[in-house]
Image 1: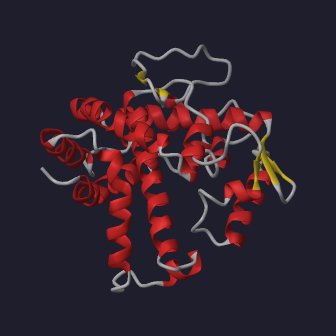
Image 2: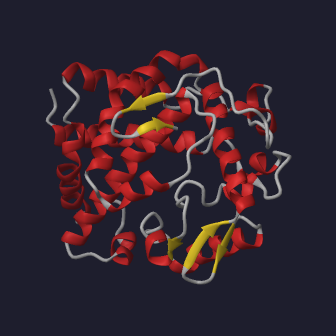
Length: 278
């Protein structure tokens, strides 16, 4: 059995690959094609992964956008202002009412699209839901800066098991991001300094080692068989999916229109620390 620190190192890239592929299941243009909303779900998709349900300050939004140059982050928010998704006065960022509806539509479309993309890997999806729920709960309980983002962001009104898994993976990646930030800050780097450091620079290895140490505790719920099962299930999802729109369904067919009855055949997955996961 790998130590928690060693497993944190082993599982980091598989988690990254599967979560990033899931995040890209629908393009902004596909989301923009969804009809029936005053604000484009494609525009809302620019912020829905990190913007709180309620107002956020500029300092708060810099946490999930810590690696974005400030001018790029402000440009993204200004684009969302122009699209009617948010209001932003230079300091406080908040959804408009129409922006909230569009954001929820984007989340529903992603959840439905992921259910299609991973339809041939249902057993692995449910296995990972079981294995990773306590890991994600430990990440939120750790109280690192990104745990607040996880607690505060919107959830899909019509969750699917595959959409739930995407949220678990996102929570786990966010926690590792916090551990990484603590590691490079502890080594004396600024965000500009760590971004400028070459990927193969020798200075990165001690930072990665420290990241794994800080990230170790959340993996304590997995025994040896669980570790093996987790790696195998992630491998099965890694690149195995077919984009939802490639299977005869457009994004507009995957999301309920506004005012539709929100019912979905897939059960919700609950965890006592996180509640309903979407």
